[in-house]
Length: 190
Image (tube, rainbow, N blue to C red; front, side, top):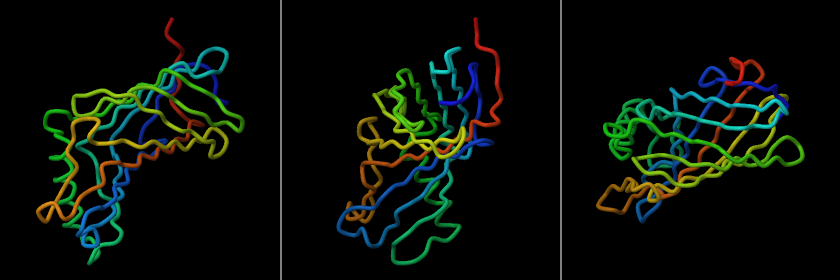
């Protein structure tokens, strides 16, 4: 990474977290592949004096997931459909008991071209499991990261409807876009 040492704090003001779900099952054509956005999240990246990342912590408010789009299906999603899907997503994710998801990155492996991988742990639904973010440079101090989360690894039963004929696939694609060029910077802790 080409950013200077210190603590860099950012969130929705300098980035975007998108979740993509996909339909499955015998009645898949009736459902929609969804694009959801985390509208409240925060992150802190600590960069060592030698300009290598030392730690990353991202916290996502799962109660603030918003359905942005739905593709496929027998009919287009209405605003009401999007709100109802949001309510269902909060139930599936048990946000009343586990309102946040947290990713803690501890191992950073750089690759030529400004990208690499960040290995750490994801805490979701009261459970923690390893997770790896694949990072690519998207411009000067701009990054795009992707990961796949298997819901059942965290004790989440993916949504089903129509007596199990319509399902949400177990894996959810996660995309993160971050612009670190104007993040709030603090001196590293001593």
